[in-house]
Image (cartoon, rainbow, N blue to C red; front, side, top):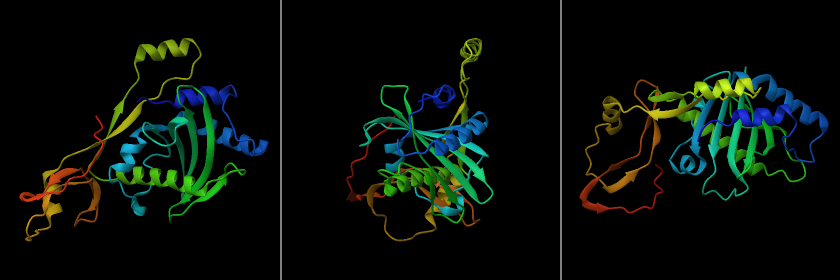
Amino acid sequence: MGCHLHELAENMLVGKTEWYTSLTDNEVIVVVNAFLDNYENAVCFDGGSIDSFIDGGYKRIDELVELPFDICWVEFSVVDSSIADFSIICFLLIKQKDGFIALNFKRQKNKNDWMFDFSCFRPKRGGLEVSICDKSGIIEDAIRNQMELISRFLTAINCVNIEIVEEKPDKKIQKKRKKRGKVPLFSRWTLHIKINKSINKQNNYGRSHASPRIHLRRGHARRLRSGVYCWVSACIVGNKENGIIHKDYKVIN
């Protein structure tokens, strides 16, 4: 998908970002300053399709919901979602002593138009403290759902067998953008699961009962005997002689 932080930054710098009419001028200034003061130091992550991430079995583990860097940018693409007006949902996450601040933005489909959605604080103890949002039609459940998405993403990224792989922008393109006075493109990081045979063995826990019917085991976080968490990728398990459990899943290439 690529990183789109430079697009939002350019819009912010020239005042093209869209805002809810219910926001006060002071609230807009607070968000703009928070963004411009932090975006250049953000480590960018591509979360892939929001639908495949939600359907992939990711669960929140509160002790793992922590930023890996002081400032993070995380974006998800919206493909087959009911949120038809937007193509990308993004979060600028800023670490605080007792949690982190999240600024949420959305990019309209087929356009380079960005809109601020909400700002909130997530304490380490869990829960949410919404600070800036659309007062005329606030949908608290929607904010909770989006922050739940980020919490699941942070859970996955903090598992011991998740490898973060960097994809750097082309140097020639960077030079051209610099000459034109454009905001530079950002590197993006993607998550890769490192397969570890010793981890897979620990997942069996010496079970002796008969194998279940063949089925797809969804990906999930697993706490090992050592106390650390690992991510277990989805796989086919079971004994075909005992039958097959059929489920419909979307395959993402």
